[in-house]
Length: 70
Image (cartoon, rainbow, N blue to C red; front, top):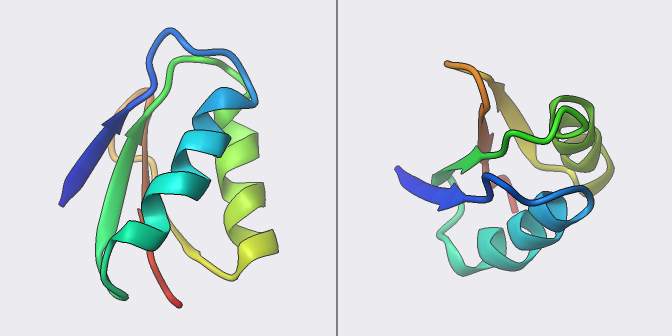
């Protein structure tokens, strides 16, 4: 699993970084996004729904797992 550290960044920067990094990973890979902006908790799952990617949950505070579906 790869990690993308976006702590200290305000929205929409964590989602933009996610959108740029995820296509570089193979289908089925999981990317853990570290983001401490409170908006990330709703923005990252919403982005996954809009882009057809799988939001795999938040295993710990300020961490969001996204699995590449396509």
